[in-house]
Length: 74
Image (cartoon, rainbow, N blue to C red; front, side, top):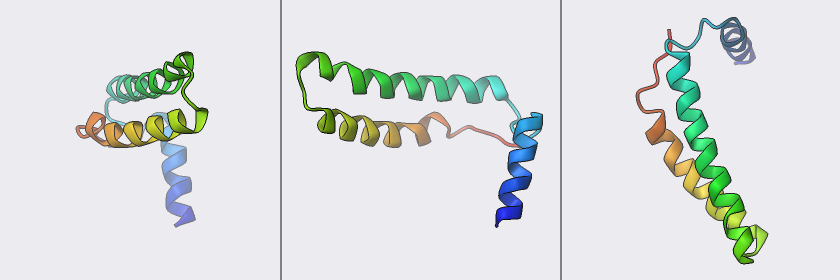
């Protein structure tokens, strides 16, 4: 199992794992933006930190599979 992980990490760092890297990074950026928005915006309205972290994590974890549904590897 570790050997497969190490091989995948080497391919990723060489740029040979992802077929369309621009698409991957764009989708990851959208997910990070949603996460940051949900994490920091409610703090301005005096919501508790634990609640914003839980909501941000749940929504981001739900959205990421939909953002990366067309993700293709080589």
